[in-house]
Image (cartoon, rainbow, N blue to C red):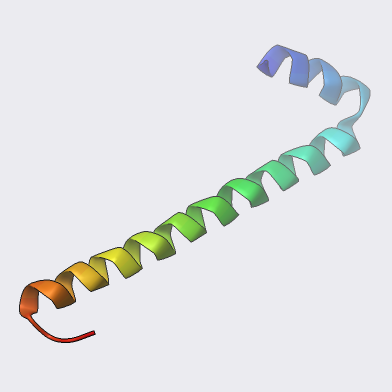
Length: 54
């Protein structure tokens, strides 16, 4: 897959760069969503273990 992308990059460097920027943005966006979901879950678990109401 990397070799195919390298060949595509040689022919279309600007388009390939734009594709990689979009792919990185999507990966970071998904990771941020997962991180926020994990933080909320951990907070709820900590609150339930201390007996405090939510």
